[in-house]
Each structure stands twice: as C-alpha cells, then as structure tokens.
Length: 510
Image (tube, rainbow, N blue to C red; front, side, top):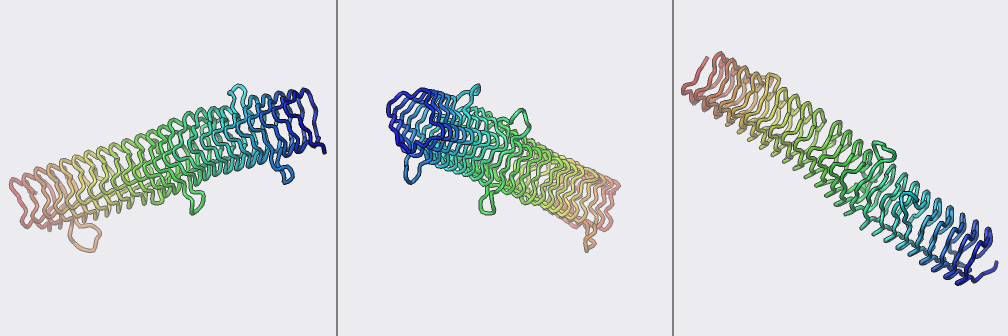
C-alpha cells in the first residue's frame, strides 16, 4: 500500500478505482474528473480540496485505528457522486456542494457542522437512503435536498435549514431540531418519534402528489410551543412512544391544519391551539386538551372518549353532533353555539360550562354534571337529563319538548325562566328554589315516577310567576312555599300536590 501525497496538485482524469490510498494526503488539491470507485480512502486528508465531476461511488473513507482521521474540512464538491460511500465518522464540516449525490451513503457519526448540502428544486441534492445516524448537522444547510428514505436517528440538526425538501419515509427519531424552521416541505410517512421539536415553526407542509394525508409519526416527541398553520398533517400519530414517554403538545399551535385521522391518544396537549383545524375521525382517547382552543374546528367522527380532558377548552361553534364524549371533562368549557345534537355526554362533567345558544337536541346527558352552567337560549329538545345535576344552572329562554327528560334530575336553584318545556318530563326531579317565572310548562309532567316513594317532583320554594302549566301533571308534587302568582294551571292535575304556604295570588287553578 502506497501512502501518497497529492497536496496542492491539480489532478485531472486520474483513475484510482479499487486502489488502497489509506492515509494519503490531497490537501488543497484540485480534483477534476477523478474516479475513486471502490477506493480505500481511510484516514485521507482532503481538507480544502476542490472536486469537480468526481466519482467516489462506494469508496471507503471511514477512519480506523491505523488511520484515525479522515477529513474533507472546507472541501468544495461540484457534481460529485458519493453514492454508497462509507463516510462514517468523517469530518465533513463546512463543506460546500453543488449537485452532490450521497444516495445510500453511510454517514453515521459524521461531522457535517455548517455543511452546505443545498440546491434548488430543479436540481435537488440527492440524499436518498443516506444514513446520518448520530451525525452532527448543526447549522447545516439542506435546502431542497431529497431526503427520501434517509435516516437521521439521534442526529443533531440544531439550527439547520430545511426548506423545499422532500421528506418521504425519512427517519428523524430522537433528532434535536432546536432552532430549525421547516418551510415548503413535501411530507409523507416520516418518523419524528422522540424528536425535540419544541419551539419549532413549520409552514407550507403538503402531502406527496396531492394525497390527502401525510401519515407521519410524532410518538413521544416534545412539541412544546410547536407552531404551524395551514399544514397537511393528516394521519399523523401523536400517541405515546411507550407507557413512560407520552407525546408533549403543550402550547402547540396547529391552526387551520389538516389533521384528519390523526392519533392523539393519551397526549399531553394543554393549551393546544386547533382553531379551524380539520380533525375528522381524529382519535383523542384519554388526551389532555385542557384550555385547548378548538374554535370552528371540524370534529366529525372524532373519538373523544376515555376520559379526555377538555376543561376550560374553547369550543364555540364546534360541530360535535353525534360525538361520544362519555367520561370527558368539559368543566368550564366554552361551548357557545356548539352543535351537540345526538352527542353522548352521559356522566360528563360540564360544571361551569358556557352552553349559551348551543344545540343539545337528542343529546344524552344522563348522570351528567351541569352545575352552574350558562345555557341561555339553548335547544334541549329530546335531550335526556335523567339523574343529571343541574344545580344553579341558567337555562333562561331554553327550549325543550315532550321528549326532554329531567327525570330524577337535581335542578335546585336552576333558572328555567321564560323557557319553553311543553310536555317535558320532570318526574321525581328536585327543583327546590328554581326560577320558573314566565316558563311554559304546558303538558309537563311533575308527578311521581319510578322511585321508591310516592312523592312527585320537589318544587319547594320555586317562583312560577306568570308561568303556564296548562294540562300539566303535578300529582303528588311538592309546591310548598312556591310563588305561583298569576300562574295558569288550567286543566292541570294537582291531585295529592302539597301547596302548603304557596302564594296563589291571581293564580288560575284547575
């Protein structure tokens, strides 16, 4: 084996194919049309060299115990083919390239600090299938590079530039993206598991060839304060990496982003901003979305079961029709104008929520907690509140019908003022101290239901001034100390009702 010194020489057309040049020196040499195919180049010094039209396919640059340092520091490479080359542990810091081909090259543990691996979309740097595992790409420029099938597992890309890249089947597991901006990216089936994306901003990310989803994985990644808008992240997987490594989405902004079929199972996403996002068929099972903003988000077919935390979430105007929310925490949630038609809210905690002008028709709220909710002008036609707690709730001007059920519900201190509950079922309900002024309770049922006693609904101390209860059933109901001034009970059934202490000024009785 000859150790050769080509320092500062101009080499043109040399053919070193298959030779052993380990330990040789090319310091500041100019290499034009040179060929290093299958050449052994361990421990060679290519520092500050200039390469033009060089072919180093499958060349071996990897240092060894005998030849411990291979360097291309500040080398300039134009139209150089390094496909399949072994560049593991090689110093490629501050190289400058144009038309580089690193397809299937081995770059594990390589130093690419400030490496210039950029190009234009019309002539992309070819990094397809390259292995950058644990490589140092700090402040590297990868603009427009084709990263299809490349592997960056545990690489350091802090401060790197990613713009107009093809990121298809690319593996970024465990990568540190601190200070990295993604823009104008084509994305498909990429893996960002365990990556550090905290504080990172993405813009203009789209799917390959107009596909509807990008199907990338972010399991166990840290996306704290991650910011993106109007992206396609359809089919993304944000679920936990394992039982001890949840995905962190605290403070994330994904406004107007396509997230159809995304998996948010068990994520920690307190304060996430999803305004206008398309979350069709997204899975939020067991997710913590406390204080989330889902204003005008599309949640058709979304899965929100498993104890999802939506306390103090902003859900105004959201369509949750038919959604299963059993076990969810919606305490303090802002649901003004939301459509909850046919939603299953059985046992859900809605205490303190704002349901003003919301549509709850045919929703299931049996056993739900609605204490102190504001639900003025809310539509509750066909809604089931059986055994629900509505203590001190405000349902002023709300509208129910003959299919609305408050059976055995606790409405003590609740306001149904100026509401309409024609034919609604209040059997065995507790309305102690409720405000029913000017409420229309025509045909409503306050009689004894299926409980063990023979007492009907408890309307002790209610105010029903100017109320209408035509043909209502109050048999065995408690109306003790009720203010029934000017109330109309024409045709009502008051058999067995207890009117002790009731105010009956100008009351129309049967």
